[in-house]
Length: 99
Image 1 (cartoon, one colour):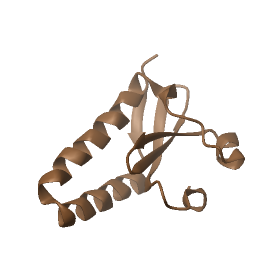
Image 2 (tube, helix red, strand yellow):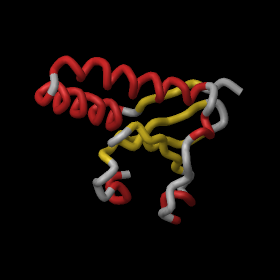
Image 3 (cartoon, one colour):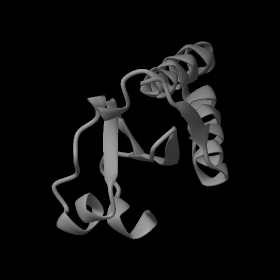
Image 4 (tube, one colour):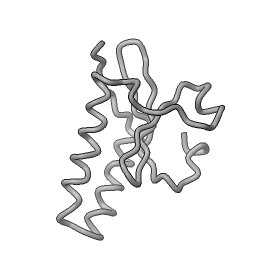
């Protein structure tokens, strides 16, 4: 089943911050990296359950799943006809409190 992918505002801001930080460090890499992240997010339309369930029981019970695009984690939920992307966070952050 193909679903619509909706990137929520907070996740859009995360992506912009990732782009800005990457561009400061390696300007030539920023566009390529963000494009790769966006491609992974778009792939959820046809493969919504490809991501893993978090080990954290609270997040798992809330229905979160995540994709890894080193060093970032894309947190999302699969709904009937939609995938909602909530956050794109660095894997070393204490993400439970940010979701």
